[in-house]
Length: 154
Image (cartoon, rainbow, N blue to C red; front, side):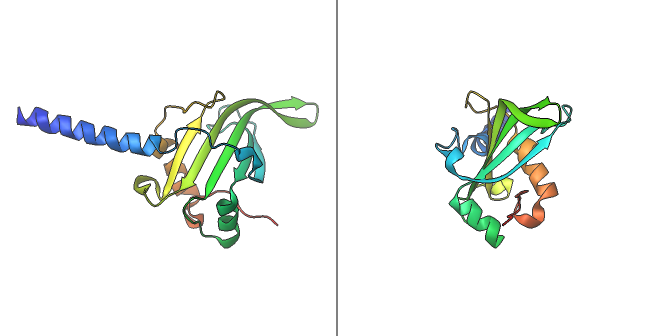
């Protein structure tokens, strides 16, 4: 009986942490397309986990952080992913695949001080493990730049 009670408490605690990690920002930030365009890039390999035409946007705090190399609370990035369309030598964005979001917040302890989320083309949150799907990649590839892959280019 005690074992079952402890298991129930443990499962509830894990669920709460997972919910907090996933649900910090549950809607696409309004007006993000008016933020500063940081970069575009294309991953043409459809088997790659981040396949698509990417457009990255940052709010003012994010741009200040890119310039300074340190991010203040409230810095936000949004990466819009689109299908890759080609027409001869041209590569263009097609239909939207998803939006990936990150926001600097000291409360995001399990994800290095950033909240992560992803939204489908319908702007609804995608059910995913953001620790495995976002944080671990950022921690592995952008640890020296506070988990941000983008660089400021004048």
